[in-house]
Image 1 (cartoon, rainbow, N blue to C red):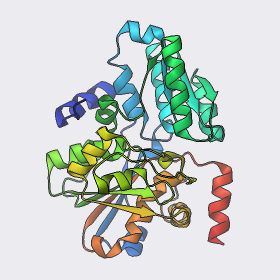
Image 2: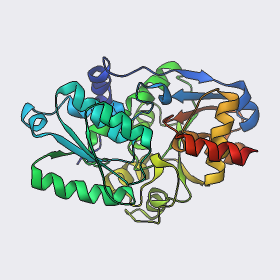
Image 3: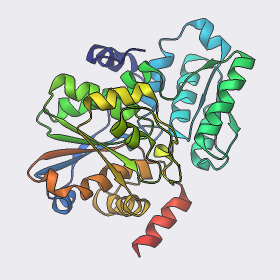
Image 4: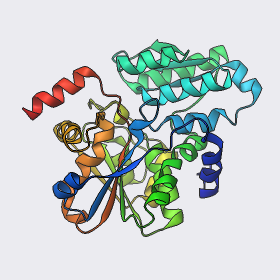
Length: 321
């Protein structure tokens, strides 16, 4: 597999334009005071109709599939947002989607997938167990399996939100982006470094699911224990394709605790009046952790999603009190 180029992302932007929202980039003075940066903006991918950035990738991928592939049905594994993306794209392009999710998957995200017409299969305690199961089932049933990370057209699709950032804020200094499997961060790196190599891209991952972080440091795809509540970051293994892109382009990579993400969820409610999930709050948690590095800079925080369960919201609010 070859990493997508800026040209691929521009083509994806044109391809998905009729199906996704061009999300806002809002400046928040309250966050500037907390972080100490010159200007702080939030890229609100939580304002997508499905509440997360992933739908950009799903549309870009299925739009390029053959009719034969679509007729076979498409399959994937997901902790939630990627599954919604594939379910939505399948409904747009007339395919049947089969999506494996962990037993404890976010009920709101599961309901959304089913409402979009997907068949949702609960299997395994963790994402990686769901992925292994649906890979086997797809071979048996003939579905067109979509790997949640090793698909360059997913990266090109989600990279379009960074095109929007640079169109709206050409002189951005730093983009802070959550990292789960790495498609969002990878797409951000490809676009930002192609347009202006001086833009710093900083990844943030959960301390309780550090596979991509450890792989970035070591230069090889590794596995690591996965204990985070952050569904969008809940991967126990890294992938060579994503690690290669991040190793080449990512300027820094930091880890945040569960408590720091919970606090960032509440800070978003207070300062931006947005409900965000743990992964979406990770960029703010990370920025607060590296205040000294961000002083005097124009900073964009990627709010990757807003699909927070009521139970997780209760935990975050209880911690704040």
